[in-house]
Amino acid sequence: MLKANCKTSWNSTEIMPQIHSSSFVDESATIIGDVRVGKDVYIAPSVSLRADEASPIIIGDECNIQDCAVFHGLKGSSIELGDNVSIAHGAVIHGPIRMGDECFVGFNSVVHASTLGKKCFVGHLAAVIGVTLKDGSFVPHGKVIDTQEKADALGRVPESLKDFNEEVVEVNCEFAKSYSIRRRSCLGQ
Image 1 (cartoon, rainbow, N blue to C red):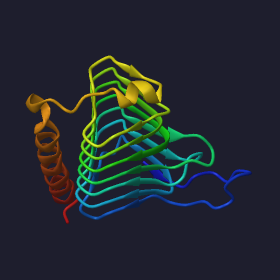
Image 2: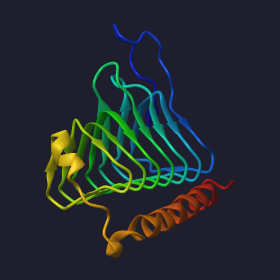
Image 3: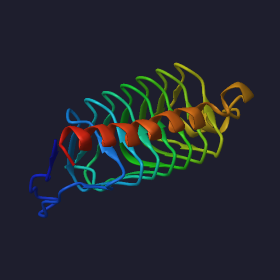
Image 4: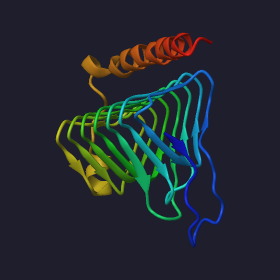
């Protein structure tokens, strides 16, 4: 479902989402307001991208937003994802957020009011709150990173996970293409 945001005291302009023609949005996803989706993006079932409070939400090229992920944010903030970013099932991305290229955010993780450098890996069930992560930072599964001191102490993404996001992006870019073709053929286009 694509729809404009409602008018509010902080935003008097209704804006419809902008989805690049090469991207796929599942019919059960909800995208509201000034959401800008780049090329070859896959947005899975039951995703919620709400730019009715935080605005805009910008999704870079070749990203994937997996099932039941939620994007929202505080009034006056925004969310921006670079290219080749993976947001896994059930993750909550709550603005203000700036996320660099090639980041991975794991299942049921929370990222709030933070900046992530390029190639960061946030493990499953982790929380990143109010910090800045350096390029290549690794947040282990289940860890809570809620002070800059904890963020600065993080290690680098382990060798065993360095190519993980690249594989996830590859699979989901293929989903974007294949589901788009299937939709067009079902519609007789």
